[in-house]
Image (cartoon, rainbow, N blue to C red; front, side, top):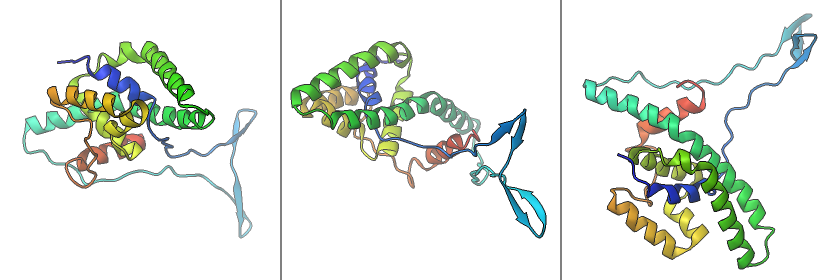
Length: 203
């Protein structure tokens, strides 16, 4: 079941969180189609220096039932759908924070936030409207994990206390909570492992 009430909330989130940098790959020089690697001379031998990608390893998971396994697969599927939005949100906040620092008045800041919100609504609303409630809840969790602050705090900082309170009330009616925090060592431990695997390209 999908609910459109997530759309204005998530559109605001898209302009709102801190930048994430994944593992960086090694850049190589290519000459005439050949890859040239940096080298080390050791005892007269020329040895290429090759960066081995980092991998994440977790214990093999055992499932008590088919239902539990299906829930696990659904979590992976939802993560793959939602994570790109969370990553985009982080970068948008970084860019937005930098621009807001150049503005001198509250009027200029408000106009900038409203303009950014409209542009993002035009670009992303057709996609965000397709999110399910469970995917919306997951995005709220990811925002807190990546940004270090809840969706409610993000909305309050951008739009003020009254709009944040309003959308929190709406979210509660539909069984969600904009104040949800990511619990790495508790209820979100499995989700955190899946995120790490996804970030390493292993999922």
